[in-house]
Amino acid sequence: MRKQHEQLLVAALAGLVIVGAAAFVVQPAMAAGYQVEQQAQVTGVAKWDRLNIRKWPASYSQKTGSLKPHTYVWVERCIEASQGSDWCLVERGNQMGWVNSAYLTLAGDLDI
View 1 (tube, rainbow, N blue to C red):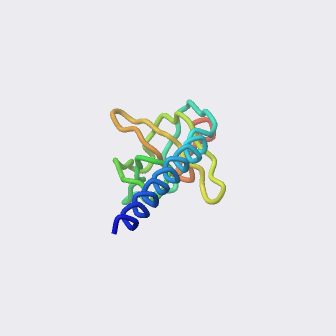
View 2 (view 1 turned 30 degrees about the horizontal axis):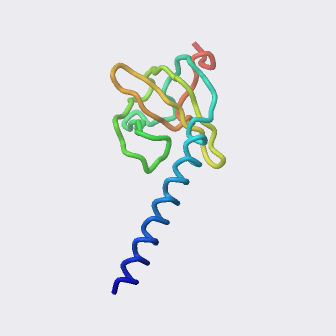
């Protein structure tokens, strides 16, 4: 029985090492991106719908808020996705989080 406990402990420690190493590998990818630092408008969202603000740049991440269509936000930075759309870190009032960049139009690109 003691041998089984040792094997379980070794397996658990190996799992922790793998998870810890994975966290260091993922962190630089999350930090990579490009600065935007300008205003943008929520576009491409139906007038009855909302653009979700997420805690992290992923569609499965926790929703922390939402934005109405045509709302202006401040875009801090964006990260490039290898597949799909980029994600941008936005701020509006006391809300801050990540949105899918496909639903943002930078203020300089708007026809005013």
